[in-house]
Amino acid sequence: MEGKIIIISAPSGSGKSTIIGRLMERGNIDMEFSVSATNRSPRGEEIDGRDYHFLTTEQFRSAIDGDEFVEYEEVYPGRYYGTLRSEIDARCAAGHNVILDIDVKGGVNVKRIFGPRAVSIFIMPPGIDELHRRLTGRATDSPEAIAERIGKAEYELTFAGEFDHVVVNDNLDTAVDEAETVITTFLAS
Image 1: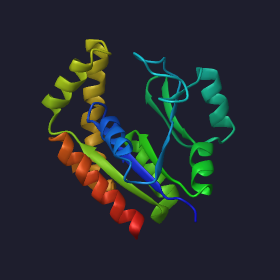
Image 2: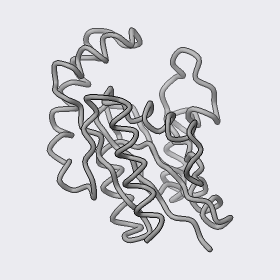
Image 3: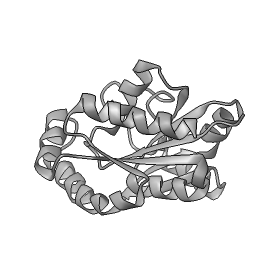
Image 4: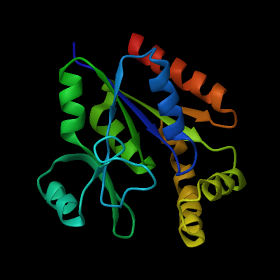
């Protein structure tokens, strides 16, 4: 039986990667992580192939031209993120469910492509002030980059209604529990 697709999207700093990490650690759901591709440099201790497929801008554009993505987005000027079709196809064909940690527009696009084979979950931050605090606390971006991310987040929040489910991340344990319930219900259907 072919696997299903779980889409988790949110503005940067909302906790989507942390929630996915907790779900994976719990191990209650048969799902494999789809590693996104990007042309940005690794941050901190990120590893190519585990956290992202780190491509050069030329490699990323070549993959776009080769129709190798199910979705991609120029999230910031000159900064690309995308989901390689091969990441989804191989895992689903092997009968595994695939979880995607992707930007908001990408989440909407992937849901449109896969329809009922996919569930989309929007992780809502408790507020813009809290989002700013989280991004600042990461200590990975300049104040200018944080301001740009906050502006983008305000725009991305307008897409929440296009997702199957919205989970507010004001308490991490509760948000993880809610996401797990949504996913297990979807996979059982």
